[in-house]
Length: 280
Length: 168
Image (cartoon, rainbow over all chains, first blue to last red; front, side, top):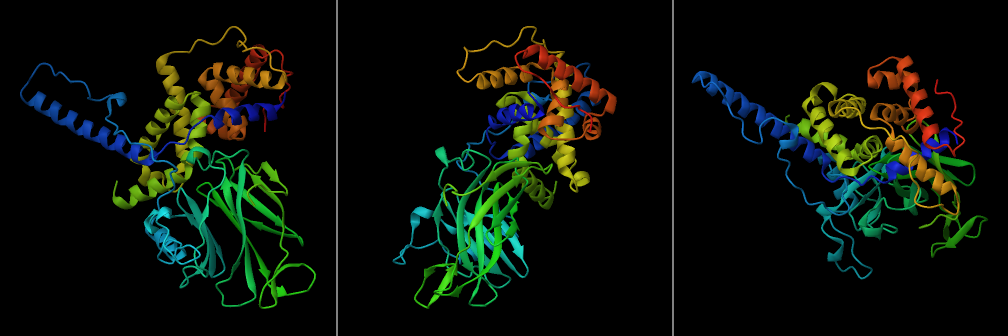
């Protein structure tokens, strides 16, 4: 047995931990309660000394940490990070101010409200950005710029491999959810962003996606999600490498992900994936 | 805390909570204890947020390890396991059996020794940083790690415990 086995034993132990809902709220409430108790204790002591009472009885609930009245919070299923004001603006832009509709243009109330969506991950690409927004039900990938919320209409994809609603209950350290070609926000009709979006376990700090033709892209990793982008172009139909001729005689290029490598904060490789990728 | 500070604190916790609960769990070996440890430390973090917001992660980790060691001191030294952990029957693969034994042995280590191993092998930190976090010398970290590994060898004799040198 080596250091590696010890690391693995710790990792397995850590995998037993369950995510905690509203941890920040609980900590802030505990802090507030402790400060309130201090203030009350101070007032009681002041009164007590003023009237020269020889003893003061503190009832249960004064002082000690164990007595702080934490408010019981019902765990919300599939917690996602709350948006800041700036993030909410990005989310709204990505959703084009409305939840996705079906092929017939009908509303999809089952997908929830726009306000349910959160910015999951975002990567700046020059003056543009690529991002994913989502809810506990699914996600939408997005390409935008300063004055462009989302180049394409939002297309909703339900989460796969999320047993019991836990988005991070998948096996392994990395889950690839979507590889997609998106038009760019620079107005050039032939430019494309090739995006790979997915989820990562907490120990993943950095992730690199390798593509065919010797390309690689460092992903943005935020909130347990990642998005990686590489540049591509549509090519005239019929040239080698195309695989999907459309009505205009142009084709998406044959961009293939060849490898995905995830690293921990210390730079150690924690996962290497090669095709076929489950979920993609 | 004003509203802006609360928002930045909340954003930090939401971004890091999944990772922090894992560390807390490895330290305590129990979900409730891990949550309590983390809530206590985060409440302290929130109280000092104005001063540490530039690098809160380092503060939280230091506070978490020291809080856990302090709890252990307040409670008194835990009884360490004298016998190798019992096994729930031989597994066909043996490897699984060994991992279960190692898990039990890690949980049986006193918290300070466990903290040293967690920082070295789970967090992948060099000895100098471990010493900094635990507020002790590098020599103390080395001796604690050495004793912890020796204890693991006693508790899991089947494993060929051939650890690399703990120095870095």
